[in-house]
Amino acid sequence: MKLELGTEERFLKFVSESKGKKIALISHTDLDGITSAKIANEVFNADLLRFVGYTDLNIELAEELKSAGVEKIIFTDIYIKDENFVAALENFAEVLIIDHHKTNDLNSEKTVLIKGENGYSAGYLCYELFSKIKNLEKFDWLVACSCISDYCHIKSEKWLNEVMRKYGDSLEHVNGYVRKSGKFWELQKTLSMALIYFKDNPKKVYDSIGDNFGEIGDLENFANEVQSEIDKAIVDFEKGKESFEEGWFYEFDSKFEINSIVSTILSMGKQNKIFVLLSPYKNLYNVSIRRQDKKFDCDKFVKKLIEGFDSADGGGHVPAAGGHFMKKDLAEFKKRLGIKTFK
Image (tube, rainbow, N blue to C red):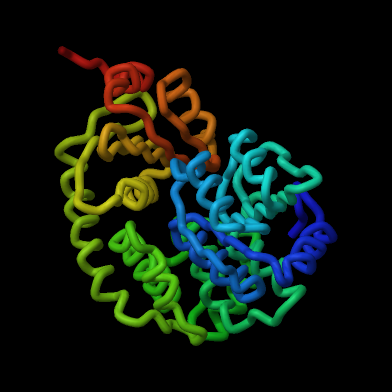
């Protein structure tokens, strides 16, 4: 795997100079983010560990870290585009960003940005990098789960198959994706469902993950409740969907934040169609967009749909993207999709 931004030398220098410093490790709230943090923290043993969403990357967070006396900040599986936020961090700390999303080059004297090759999960990127410092093979199963859950199973195929076979499973593809059965499929699904359940406390999931294969405590009990909500949303989609030229729009509410995973499940059934799913959150809508044949850029599409909206943001990858916008802009959002709205 090649690095698209940053160098291994600067990464290793940052790590070596972190000894004795007060460290904050901040990662995304999905399974890839949890995996990345698990790997990175084997080396850093951070003083402060946080799991955040993209709306949490703001000046308030910078001030909190500054007040805590943090000297080194590590972000994993987090796409940071606000250069003012980075500048605020650089006023009091040195920054390391390890990520796999499309991004501007934020490398500077005080910031090291490592952007992995497109097609690899952030967990795999962290595993590759930190394995140069410490043997992390005990977490190979967890990294494999991150590859599957984040749709990064093609370029890492050889390694992924070796790891799956090590634990009595095998890598097989059905309709262009990993077979939806077997030890690894069920394990990554359980972890992902548990993260949805513990949205406000993802560290519960982080702490439940042990060193041995499949060691996840009691997370399966909570995952089952989320799965029931997902099953209901998929059934209700057929009743409530609205059509536009290249796909379907669907707005729904749930006690869990499941629009991302529901859009993924639906889109795997019709890979040449665009799925746009909305779910309300406070004064916002969270949007999840999928098209799995990779002949359409969902990242560019979501940015175009919310362009110019107040307090809106979004991005992602070619087959999958997400974001948020204010509820007051729903009519214009649907208009841009080509859906007629009536008042």
